[in-house]
Length: 83
Image 1 (cartoon, rainbow, N blue to C red):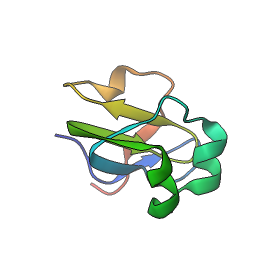
Image 2: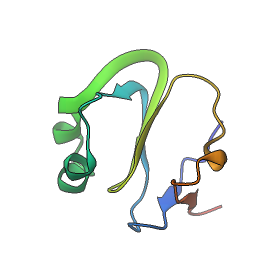
Image 3: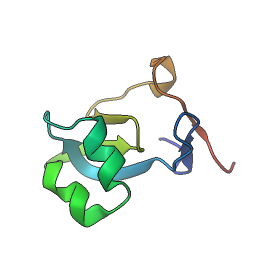
């Protein structure tokens, strides 16, 4: 389970999440900076993977395919935005 209202305190952008997708290895900072939150542009670097979830804001991104505690990742500045 994860909060569906995550917000990044670094770029002040809402964190988008995509069920059953991971990010391509070629993703970089400029890709997300230029394409968030336009799903039709993001799809160019999304790979279908059942049971996975892809997260992204304008400055950070993660692909998760197993139970992971995102709070342990110091470089992520994602916090609950509404609860």
